[in-house]
Length: 463
Image (tube, rainbow, N blue to C red; front, side, top):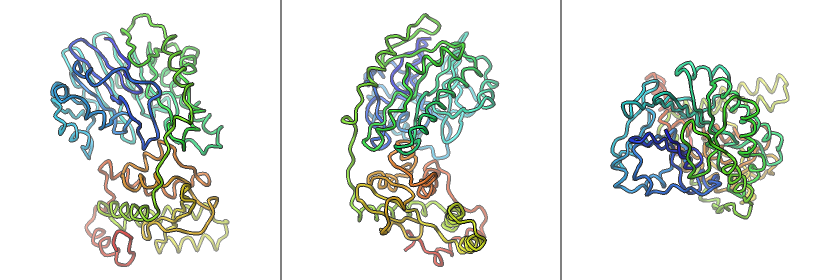
């Protein structure tokens, strides 16, 4: 088996008659201009002429990126089989089907799929939509953990016990989401160290012969998140940690480099090229953002609420947000008995505590909640739960996955520890809906009550 590195999380496993590419993000900024590839991809769309299979690990755009997928020439798509996990929403499967790929196969958990007489793959879900892939061929095997948060010895062992010996491990190695405000340098350093510790734990539990670090060859490419790059793990450090603290050999590849499994390989050139590319990054290369007018943001917020209500039980949503509001008030309460009793009454009357949002480029604060939508208020930035740009807030309102994008691209700051949750509690519901999970009642009586209560507790989307 020969493996060729494409970029970031993408590589090709070449078995001769089978050529499987994973997560082909070839070009372009993703996560609302929050991430971009550090190094240029050598593999281009014409190279799909030799590909027989594509595996997408999950729906995030650094793994499944429709603008790139659409550029695969139609004549090549007709010869490529797409592999993807079974999901409730089937968005990826249906999208690929409409693009005219040869076949789209949904992979059931723990069920191997034979790609040929001597090559098989098994795709298993982990959490938050992520999956890992186990590939078996004669005399060897590969486990691509990818973005799966395999954090403990018990979790790693649960995977190892399923498959036995694992010869080649692929896993991510650096920061991949918001990890504190700009001034919280030590917090990000801790997050970066946790990513290194994760690789070492996975390697020492699963005991592969080789480890390929991947899924982290990105930079935070926006003026609002560029600061995160300073604490990202460089690949030279990752290579050194694997060599010093595990029995596995790290294999570091640069876009276009390849390695015959088991053969001698030197990392020196690839490491030096990656480091050089990383060191050339500068704020002057980062994306700037449009300013979204206040009146449009108000309409975007109303559209967001209507979208939530269209697929959810309003009463159940109201209860959910009332409970989170109760928890926030409890957290900020003085601890007096009177405050606690008052808070309980507010919960009983489904009182929502609005998120206080400071929109930096408008220089203005707003409240947001399910009942009243987005409204300006006269408070300082310091009094708000979360600060962000108008473009980020609009993106979050207009896309069910927008809140998840915001968490990943880190284009915000919170006013206090956990302050982001005042807004993100709404985004979490939207993310669930994006995956086909509806917030509804299962019993008919509750459904009837839920339909009646919007008249007593009207929301913006019900006006």
